[in-house]
Image (cartoon, rainbow, N blue to C red; front, side, top):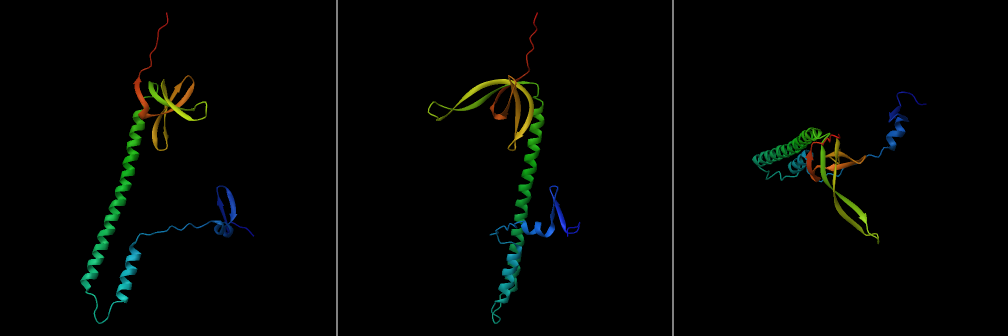
Length: 174
């Protein structure tokens, strides 16, 4: 009998909690790195299996612990630097998006690569110069791009393909 204590709701669908738990495959991650636990297990094993008539000097154990502590601290520094690199990358992207937003309403010239097939079906590509008006900014696969409208058709343009940015011209018809 299902009641609120033995059910689980996932994405709006209610399941029997035990059946849902059993249906979830638990993914185990293979870890080839020696961590803190492995080091401590090695240390305890080393202590248990040493020769009682010729024990290892305590200073060597202290040296091993100090080396392990230094290694752990360096590992933490590397992880924190990686995290900081991601934050800086996100800030750079945000600043770039802000700068690209100022291009909305401007005209741009860019080069677009056209991929086609020849008469035999072999792939060929050529580059075509294009001009259009920037209507927006978007992120595609983590990289900022601009959205350009040309002849009623929208194009996603990589910023490295932009050749020229300029004010739209207004012609006065008399």
